[in-house]
Length: 122
Image 1 (cartoon, rainbow, N blue to C red):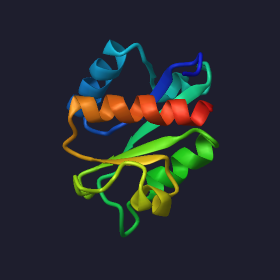
Image 2: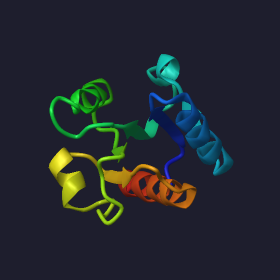
Image 3: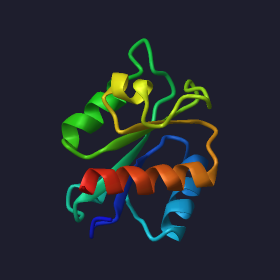
Image 4: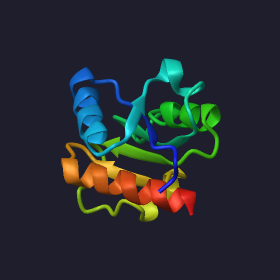
């Protein structure tokens, strides 16, 4: 696990963001917000919600990649089926570290964050 345990959560829905922050903080992750992300210690991972994976819905992903180059991204989206593997072909096609379906269970988010941040630091 990297020394920096900073996660940027880019989720538009306040209730979902609050829940993700609570879950991640409870596991020892420091959730930084966009206003302090550039000044914070290195980011371990970005959790990015994408409502639509087609028809221009990838703009927030392109922006996150541009603004935080090299930081692994896990996409959370209601358009991803639960049967899609986190690190499978869908993630590869998007050029991200992982994808997760929404709604998401706490255990799935925590497992993905731990796994993907650890893989990125290796």
